[in-house]
Length: 265
Image (cartoon, rainbow, N blue to C red; front, side):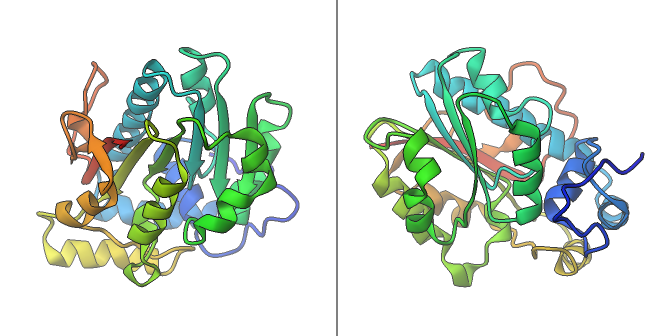
C-alpha cells in the first residue's frame, strides 16, 4: 500500500492516529507507516479487528437508512473520522436525496482530509469540533447553517465514545446533545467493549492506543446503556453490533462492540 497525498498541514511522521488506523482496518489508503505499524500490532492481538471495523460500518449503514426511512433528513456525524466508501451522505441520499449531513471531528488530521475529499459536495459540511464541548459544537456557524435543531436530527456516534475518558463525562455531553434536539431525533451509537476478553489481551490492546493520538476506553453494556437515557431504544435494543437488525451483510465475527438506536422522547 502506498501513502496517499496528505493535506499540507499534516505531519505524517507523527505518532499513530486513531482515525487513520481505523481507515487501515477498513482497507482504506488514507494512512501512513506509523498508523499501519500500530494497527498491525492491534491485529496481532485481535486478528478479527478488520472484520469488526467492517461490521461497525455495516451497522452505520443500516442505522442511517433506518433513520432516513423514519423521515429524518438531518444527520450530525460526530467523530466522523476519515470519509471512506459508503459515507453517511451517500447512504441516506439513496433514501432521501435532500438529506443534509454535517461531519464533525476534533482531530485536525481527520478534518483536513474530510474537507479535501468533500469539497463541492452539496448538502454537506465539515466542522472541527469536540464532543466534550457540545455547546460550542452546536453553536458552530456551519452546524447552525446546515441543521435546524427544531426538527428531528440523527446524532451519530460511531466508535467514538470509547476514545473519551470517564473524567470528561461523556454521558453529560450526550445528554446536552439530546436536550438540544427535537423530539423524534435519533441517537445512533456504537461502542467498543472488552466484556469477556481475557484481561491480559485487553491490556495489550489498550497499550497500543496509549501511544496513539487517543487512548482507548472500552465500556460495559451497563455503562454504554446509560448514553440512551431520555431515548426510547429501537428493537432489538442495545446489542452486539452484528445483531442490530442484520440484513444479509457478511458478519463473520463478534464485533467486540455494542450498538443501538434511540429515539428522543
